[in-house]
Length: 113
Image (cartoon, rainbow, N blue to C red; front, side, top):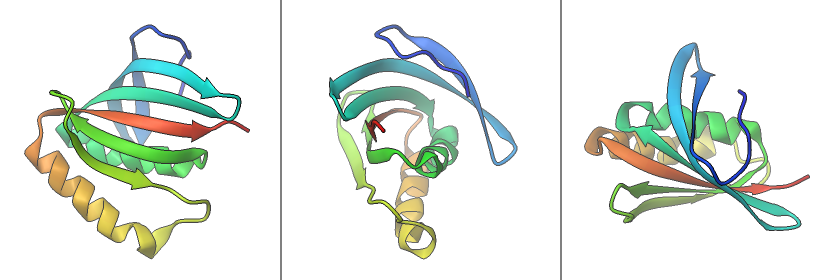
């Protein structure tokens, strides 16, 4: 995945589980010496695969999914080492959200190493 960090919008194509997903990086900013925040606009059908990809990256602290109007649908705090069966209820919730929304925004809070 290739993307630049800055305050400009850009289109990024990401491959997740063999499926290419197109996302739009809306915002990337640094919140402090150890944290950065990014926002992605995603179509509903690409939501679950994009969230799974973000979790696999490993340096994500929190994922927030919002509607186009800015209403928060779900906040997913991620601790180090959270994998597998512990995330099954989260995948079910994200899948249900993906079925209900056409477009949404994913806000990602990352740990800077």
